[in-house]
Length: 287
Figure (cartoon, rainbow, N blue to C red):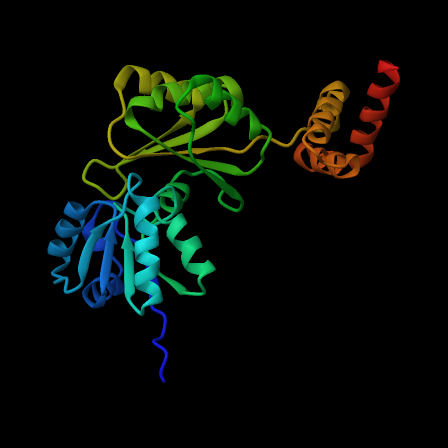
């Protein structure tokens, strides 16, 4: 008795603007797929038309609204031997797009997951920003509510890595204003819109300047924001009370004191002894 081999889940990157940027393998994978799961089936049809690809497999929608329910259906198809290709509107599936649930479920069932690498708004914006690229952190979309947005920004305000965000057109001016408030008005940034498209624009400058520009001019299209990391503070800039407070916050969140001190020292660019002394001083003053 033979056992049917499990299928393969293919995460296929799609162009972020220009169809000519599609990787050669994309057309081949779409053409051979048993099932193509697409965030927007109409966009998929436009893309295949531009690539001259004829779909022979079944096309199903897979977006935020039906992701939970359709994941089970697709995993069952994979378990039965199907080759499923997942595409989103632009870029790599599961990166701020539908796909994570399906990948996690497929991995749990022992199904092979592979990818067709391709265009990425994150890496493209980072590369053209003019900001340091040796270390960076992708933060995705910020919360919609102003208070939650500021709180999320405060979490990374001391991060020395370059930060990359996605943002919607109708929130970009508020987001840049919040960044200028939390990160400081002089922190450098780049607002990248419509990358690889006809009206591509990269606007660089201090956050306060970019916030004024966005509020006055308006920013349309797909937007990626790249923000310079925090400068490394020197010992003279270290506030012992602030260091002790940050250690206390980490302890309250469940970290052991030794690890909390190490983390704060690393974030601040200070020796562990400096942070330890600050914690001891705060304890004595409280006592």
